[in-house]
Image (tube, rainbow, N blue to C red; front, side):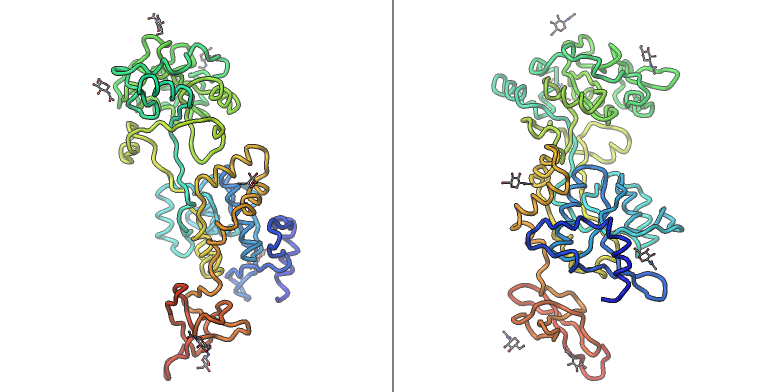
Length: 466
Ligand SMILES: *[C@@H]1O[C@H](CO)[C@@H](O)[C@H](O)[C@H]1NC(C)=O
Ligand SMILES: *[C@@H]1O[C@H](CO)[C@@H](O)[C@H](O)[C@H]1NC(C)=O
Ligand SMILES: *[C@@H]1O[C@H](CO)[C@@H](O)[C@H](O)[C@H]1NC(C)=O
Ligand SMILES: *[C@@H]1O[C@H](CO)[C@@H](O)[C@H](O)[C@H]1NC(C)=O
Ligand SMILES: *[C@@H]1O[C@H](CO)[C@@H](O)[C@H](O)[C@H]1NC(C)=O
Ligand SMILES: *[C@@H]1O[C@H](CO)[C@@H](O)[C@H](O)[C@H]1NC(C)=O
Ligand SMILES: *[C@@H]1O[C@H](CO)[C@@H](O)[C@H](O)[C@H]1NC(C)=O
């Protein structure tokens, strides 16, 4: 090893992924490799740790820790998780490109990998960036193995009562049509909920006062009584200042099913349109805090907004309510009479990673977690484990899963050939221990054997330069 990496190591020691090993036979920090990153300047390359973006949501934190353990202890790379959390895929696409903004006039230190990247809602700027900066744009290494989904949920007790006493399937939107059914009798009454736990409808920090969406509600549903115009714009028309009753039960709020929104009322306007289009008797309220939302969901029979992957209500017996299949063009117009889109959740990598560390690239392409894996990781975090501890426990428990992600040592890439332990190129896999680039005067030839495709270095035919 030359002298430069040591200087880098000295600078970065404090930030590198914990020196403590997770795996008993993991590769020690002292034996790990740096990426050789191409840079402008006399040396042409810079030895650097593999830097990972980490988003500020729990599934991203555990997915990043889990990947970092395998990249450092099994593939043998120095890995550094960014200290600053990233808020979304747009920001991470710029970090992976090493640019401060989409014009890329100002550069930032490049990151190399971003796990658990949610692709929904990426703006046109990103596609444009891929066209104008093809060498810098991040690569999509495929699904994390699970998708992200949002919808309304219903809890077990009411759902089962309804089904076993009336044959009413509360996990399907059509069962809420008040012209045919009386679903409210399987839920708590709005009057049982303490309004002190809810944000007032007229609060400007919450989505009931989202002027544009409230106008769209009135336009698409024609429900003029559902909203009212104030000096500050349109807002939801709530009877008692806290709950928005849908047309199906507006005449008597005791006939409404309480529907709990999340956050600052994320997507209440979607639930308003659903309730009106599907004749659902709902009274939508926005709990003041996450703690209050959790306690309301646990203690009452309500409909509630939730998403996956997430651990908040995994300990309850819940079902998703199924809505008609998403129609993207309608949603783009603010017309919400179909369900949420499914979110692709993928791995992103810097464009140069494939050339700098082909085995890391292959490993990341192979990596796939099941939703059950992610839910069990999140449950451990929910129970108080750090992301690192939960990830390590999963890695120790599931060797048979992640070993299938590790590229076979003798699976060579174009430009390489099989070699033995002395570094000599070989004509077949039998004595091969790995791969290395073909030397000048040789070319890399693809072969297929019973372990799959790999490459050999063969002398070039006379008169051809390698
Ligand atoms: C090489 O990497 C180090 C640490 O990552 C950084 O401080 C330095 O500026 C880099 N050099 C070049 C030429 O990019
Ligand atoms: C919301 O309504 C309450 C009661 O009607 C009123 O006292 C309060 O000032 C209103 N707040 C805003 C922000 O309009
Ligand atoms: C409102 O609905 C409840 C529950 O169905 C019922 O008991 C009550 O009589 C209704 N009130 C009026 C004014 O219709
Ligand atoms: C609700 O039921 C009524 C009566 O059968 C029907 O006419 C209406 O189309 C239904 N609404 C929806 C959204 O399915
Ligand atoms: C790992 O296995 C232990 C013992 O079976 C279990 O308690 C723990 O929850 C598992 N961890 C994960 C992340 O699956
Ligand atoms: C593999 O190559 C070795 C020489 O490197 C040779 O002795 C052996 O016969 C080859 N095996 C097969 C199956 O071709
Ligand atoms: C590579 O090419 C050189 C020059 O043609 C030749 O001497 C050498 O044997 C080749 N090496 C391999 C591993 O094929």
